[in-house]
Amino acid sequence: MRPFAFALLILFALAFPVTAQSSAFPYSPPTAPPPPDLFGVVLRLVGLTVITLLVCGGVIWWAKRATRKRLLAANTGGRLVLEGHLPLDARNAIHLLRVDGHPVVVTTDATGLKSIVPMQPTFDAALDAAEPETQAEPLVENGTPDSTPADPVPH
Image (tube, rainbow, N blue to C red; front, top):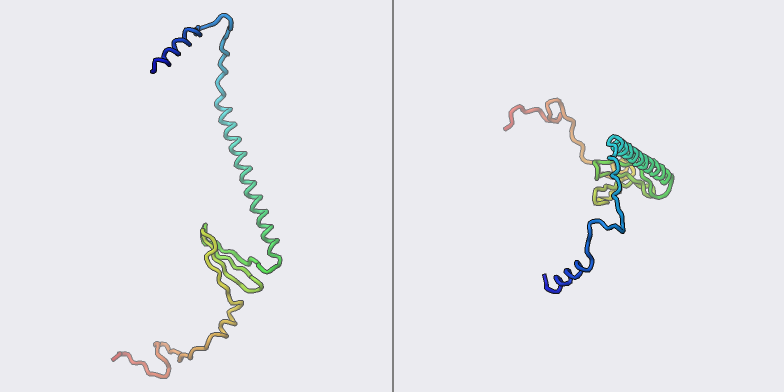
């Protein structure tokens, strides 16, 4: 410790003596409060926890119900209509939309939109557009066409 700081400390100690009890200021410490009732504290803790969880569950239930009504009301018309939703797991889903009367499949994952695939309105148009392949001859029971005789041993 520096000599100046030490001298300053001695000066304050001599100027302001500390006594154990001053007669000018009588002081008596207050009595200690009784210990809390352990059963009451635990009962209050459990009760407030249950009430808090019930309020949280009620808010979640109300939010889901309000969101569902709003989504159903939003699909009454317009250019974009949600027709179906298939959750694959907690983060992936397939959505079937109708955009201006055309079906569209949208896939999503944890990062957001994954793909958008426009679909044919019906399979009839796709089958009509496909070129017919040459018809194969009908097979008989042994797996060979009717026009050729069955050869049991290949050469």
